[in-house]
Length: 384
Image (tube, rainbow, N blue to C red; front, side):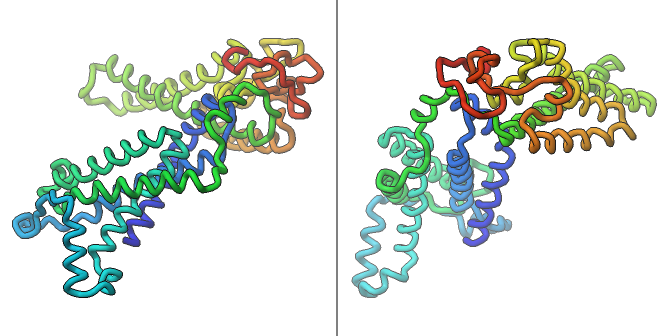
């Protein structure tokens, strides 16, 4: 059991780390801000989902040649099995035996397993209580079917009991979780609260700028992977089609095609956003930031995109030794944001930064990098 608990925590945290940036993007586009507590609850949900799998599927037995003939399980379809066995236990061993008998512990643990289901789904998803209850019952049915079918045929035979009593205990646990959610402090902002403030401009902080830069880096990596894949595919097709053996010289050309495709895709991700709308990068648009160039110059917006965000993939594409400058430039950009939200790209191009939901960046109350924030009618980053 200890291995299952620690394994669930480890896998849940790993999934949360992998999905952190996508979830961050979703939070900003949905609620207009980053909500740390909602992210914590989401992480708890991943850990809990992993725990359900760990406790209902693992550990796997060693399926030796004679295992299924000796240990294969049959479904337990009697919903009154537990009360009948409990009465027999009390009659034969006395009431004190209840506390130490595995039958009672199994019944209790199956209930406890679904208490977090009611709390997490109700609090984070905010589904109606009846829907949460139906979801808990459906999840329990799925678990029992998984055990009945031997992990849907992936195991040579069923090795855990599919028990109708578990449907009752799991659903009861979810009901307890729903009740606990109602009486415990909320702490977490509701969806209605977040949505009501979605279009309100907020001060431009250093943390928000760094988040935008991290998301930009994520977009650049995705674009480079897709561009490199497309470049290699085009080269392979033009050199005789899939399956054709390439000469050493062609392998070098393939490498160049991959790098070229990755660089072109990355530069498109940098340049195109700078030429449309507010000129903000994809990461800045995600966190509702917009650059403000002197005299409204589009040239300055393009320069802002190229001096750091465009220079990093270009340096990597040019190879050693220039490629060594790219990580140094990235570090310098982050350090500069710690000094001022304007950042290195803003200082070099003559651009400041504002919240994209502000009506007019040139109005005195609409300060670019913090201070009083205009609270009048606003527009989202996509409309700016």
